[in-house]
Image (tube, rainbow, N blue to C red; front, side, top):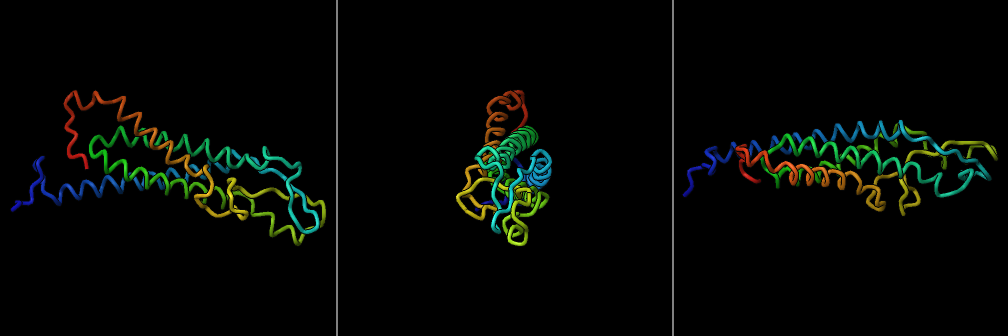
Length: 195
């Protein structure tokens, strides 16, 4: 029979409470950072222009470099935001590495989705449906999106490798903190339970 105690002196409910708080802090932090990253993404991006021809919107001039700017800025901002956020969280949350890692992975996917949603919402509307009501050779800006296999491309889906940027940056941030700051534990900081 157990007496409801953990090996570090706290009760089981204290351990679960600590895990819940750690997860909430990580998820909340990534949600805020993801929304801010979406604003930054939209602010850095310059919408490429296209023209309307026979009711369809086309890039003008055409080319992958014009269509790629949204994807490129998404990757840059998401990698940087994920890296910095995970560095800070990995430094502050000294114990519970497994819980922190799981929460960071879930939180970084949430942040990537929020970044896309906020940035896409703040950017210009999708010109494809607008083109039907416009005159030929009228110029319309592109909407903010990432390159995907989905022809619609406006919805967040895992068909674009760009959406790996936030989790990749976050994982790299945790690895950097955990493998380069081992000295904090050696100097006597009690890490507590690993979960």
